[in-house]
Each structure stands twice: as C-alpha cells, then as structure tokens.
Image (cartoon, rainbow over all chains, first blue to last red; front, side, top):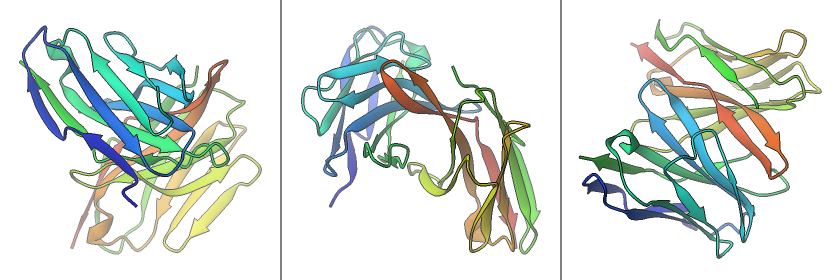
Length: 113
Length: 114
C-alpha cells in the first residue's frame, strides 16, 4: 500500500518551459489537493478536486492548471514556468467520509531558473 | 474565505519542557481543527485534531484546546523529546460551492535540545 505517490521528486526547469507533476493515490480517496510550500509561507492551496472530472481553485491558482481524469490521479501543470514557481509541491488526498484526514505525498522539489 | 494565523514561527525548548503553539482563525463557521507535523524531507502527517463540539482532546503527550468564542486553538506538547523537533502546522477548513479544503498556518519550527 503506497499511499500517495508524487513524481518526479526533483526537477529543474528553465523559465518558460512546461511540465506536469503527477500525484497518484491507491486508497480510493475521493478528494485530492495540491499545495505549495515556501519558506515562511507555510502550505498554500493551489487547486483541489472533490471527485473525478471536477476541480476548484485554491488560494494561489494563477499559473497552474489541473486535471482529474481518473479518480486515483491528480495532475498539476505549469504551462510556462516562472522563477516564482520555485517551490516544494505537495499532493494530498482524503476520504469523503473523514474529509479532512489528509494523507500527504513526500513532495516534489521544483526549481525554475 | 478562511484565514489562519500561527504563532510563534520558531520555538526552542529544553528536553522535558512543555511547548505551546497557538493559532487563530477567521471563519466562525469552521468546525474542524487539525494539527500536522512535518519532519525534514517528508510530507506533513496528521497528529491530532479537534471538532468544534469539544473544548479539549488529548493523546498521550499532546493535546489540543479550542476556544470557539475567541476563535483560537492551541497545540500543547508535554515532556518534549528530541524527536518532537519538526515543523508543526495548524489548519482550518475553507468552503465554497466546489467543496472544502484545509487552509494552513505558516508553521512553527520546534527545536528540542537535550
């Protein structure tokens, strides 16, 4: 039972490049979330999804897009990376009954140069 | 939407002392308040939570208290140990027509020295 798996774990991008971060969970959770963590800023919610085919904006959605085509996967896309998007990205999931009992992945460290 | 403020940002204690971290929230409708612990290089892990129908909850050396009138809640760690050293986050739910998600405080770095 892997829980929440994020790929890749590390990535360096050049300004303007695009990439997709993948989050996969094997717990049959309905809800999935993307957060970014920056020094002194805590965890900030980017986008989230309460079910397959549905997404919603969080606190800092600009510059990111998401898709939830399958229940177990939640993709975070950067269409044109900027240095301000250098961060550690965490994915989390939760069951609709417990709702807030989040299980987090181990993070993706992204550097945009 | 919800706004969560957390204090202090850093906290240093001696092994065996107690540690207290405080959070305030803005939405009086919020009814669930979790605390997460993040160790270096890992994702946050839920350590304790409290719902709005109780004022205090304990789990061994950790406890959480809630004051709904003042809209603040606190994490209490007693008899601290070096392995308690980590970053701690409080959170509260925000809700809109699309559903709910947790809004986190900025975190407290706890250092326990032996």
